[in-house]
Image (tube, rainbow, N blue to C red):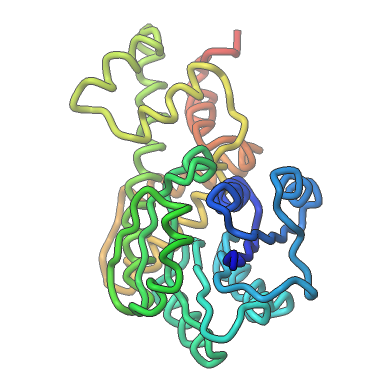
Length: 296
């Protein structure tokens, strides 16, 4: 019998993940408030999720934040009711560890398993089934979700036997990623101010010590003047805000995070919030009166 998987959230990550589940042979149902995203799932061979859908062994929740996760699973939407007894929920949003533990406890009260399973890799890897999953939870939850995780991820990092460590690790990842993107923007603007060709800058830096995954991934967006959102500016005030709040509870100052957070908030206020996060470069350049590729 084909395993049934529900996806709640069919955004840039969720839709690709659902497509990966379909390719792996899972009977895949999905919901998103955007009718266009639902249509894309159906076009890929998936089915629309509603109250009459058959119950799932696995529910994958790929929404934006903690509030949406709570609402989608146990609040007004209540999609957890569509998971069969003993089934498992994968919580994939970037949230605080305390919130992940709360969701695990609520799932347990309802006879369900829960994996704290934030994801990384971007929309392309989501569609290829090559994500990195930073997961923690009970061994039974890992066992129940094993086949689905194999369809969605290239690497599943098992980080603990309860919810929390997965989200803590994702916060570390987001700290580095958010700061690196902001640094990429500053570096490209600095290079522009020195009269350097940005394509040559990318060519040199990606084989030099100053490279980072985010520099190599995002700099081409700037060079090609392509700011279609794969990952939007507005994600970073949320995610770096979570990082800052976690650190504050540990009495740990994070000055680089604070600086990057200020830049992302300013870029969002300047109207770039829904642009690709590489557009932080445009924000920095505008303040300095610099022209980037595509702005001639």
